[in-house]
Length: 569
Image 1 (cartoon, helix red, strand yellow):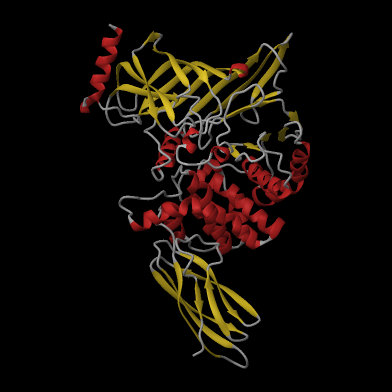
Image 2: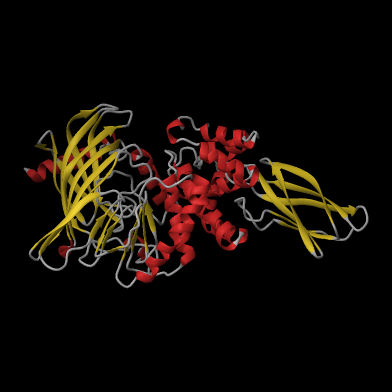
């Protein structure tokens, strides 16, 4: 009879009328009890989740997904077990490249905007697994530096959806091999869950060996530890009233606590010198952040990763990075990023994260190695969104883009947003931008144009066109080229060069250009709207031989057409 009922459910779901809508429900609340057994690399979960039907149709079927290394044990509604079918579901949103999916038949249809509470239980193991990367051709020894999530006796670190589905989610399949599929699916998930409340009481226990010193998920997590003979137990409560762009993450190890509140610092044995670079960097980083964003008013946490080549990861005010790298410059800009979050908050990811990345670039320029190094830093981020922006420009109907004002795409709200803040600094000046930042109040940010109004007021300049192209809409990127450069003799030994620059792209910008001549160069700025040209004159004390548009401070789709050679008339 059990086999027959399961078969009936599967056959019913095969009907087009009952096709599964995996993104019909939003998970609005998590209240979980998580038990970790490091010696067995196991995780067990019990708790309650709340689902809201955000589709336009009543829903009788709900989908719950966890990592394929975990298994569903129970699902109840109002204390009564409900029927569900568990099946594997291919998706790169989990490090195993698959999910364990429960297709749940609810006791009654849930109307649009109504909610249902589910009591759930699942368990299994979480071991280091780089399958989703190796199956697209990335060598194992490289993939492991990105896929370091695991539960183990020596070290535990597990990131959430997008890395390891250690809590229930519901998404369509994500595939790294299909363009931006993986990121689009993850971004839709983050956008739907941005207002969701999340609480997980984590407890780890063992019967032998030394207890891990710390279980960390957020700087202010409440918890404790206890020993009973050789047995031990450590715990922490991890909670967020709204997830926003946070990825729930936990880490556990025998850390050495080197904290200087509000700076929480945990290092691993053998990494003491690297940890010292962070402690030494705290003073200059804090001073810089205070000047731009105000004094940090909450805790930040940085926890060590054992793999010296491990890719860093940030969630909220927690940064996981290897302190085996004794790099003082890296420590400084990492601290700047976290301290910005401790000093300045915004409900809008492009402001909250974009300013933190912008601050790292400014610090590189002003406190480390100058403007060129800062632009090199920004350029590292340019490739993460430039290909997507090319698609927007060439096929806007098929690829409508990701307006910064509403995006939950990391490559946009981190990388592209950093460029936007950098361009604004270059356009209106540092003092005006600082004024706008210091005036900003997260509680007052009810309208997408609130920030534009602050910036425009500080700059005493109309910036509507810029925000329209870069924030409220996604019109792709500019594409600059020097259309013409005509030199003619000026007074004494000077030349007047008439420069015409064309913007082939669909977004406007104020861009720097440089006229080079024997013995030197002169730089100016010029505003060029989308699909337009602009002309200006520059006086040079010599014979001009070249004009170069854009020093890398404005992201554009094509950098190969930025140089114009001036030939003798």
